[in-house]
Image (tube, rainbow, N blue to C red; front, side):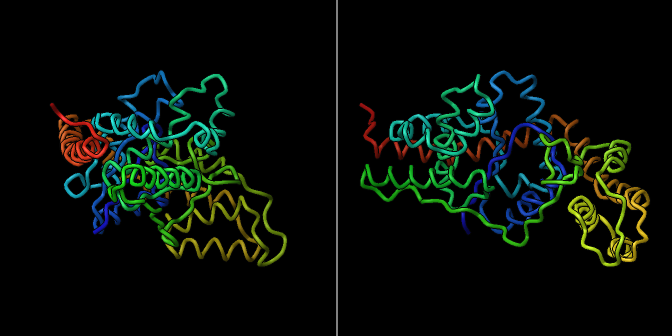
Length: 329
């Protein structure tokens, strides 16, 4: 059984893209590996140093992931800020991370372009904190998106550098956990790109039925096909992609036939799609609302997760200190 670690953003609500992307696979993955899932509240400060409601955001995200199937009895689910050992390992790794290599990372270049008035040290050393998060639990695999592949390579570099500098074989060099064909990409409702919160084109698991209907009815369409079996433009293909994952096969087949015969009425399709999304998300929404109102349960989850994570992290930091040469008198 391999050790897998995955970070969870501490801001934003989960949308259909999140669920059918990584989250559905996380639920399966936790039964096949030793999994650590953490909410990255330290990381969030690099872009939002004065959050309006950090605790509320963390609580919401935690409730959503639990409602979608992450099991605190099987996996270690914790808050990054509940494990102070991460900060110590981060400091020690920073001593062997070089400004030049950090300045060349794509994520740093992207961030300073997006937030030129907030180029803080945390942005520069983000890959080091990410490395500390991962190797403190000696993770073998890490699920990462394209935007984090370079940072994972930096983690491998820092682990290898530590082993080389201190002539030990201590830290494993983690690799990407690839879900392959199981990873379903859900498009947005604006006709282009993927579904996301910042893009404003997402359907969230906590959305009310009224909100879902409004969003779907505003989805981008065209005037309809003019030839039978005509190739679909991207906005229309996006609607069918979403329908493919939330609707009955017979429903999808019905509207495909209507499209291919130039008989499609997008209004009817959108109304059906909205109701199917509502039916799909309703159980998640109810469970999210129930869990988020149960402070005692949430307190138990984070307390149990912190205890497990700190047991793992403190062992690593203690051994790292010994390897470096910190010894008691």
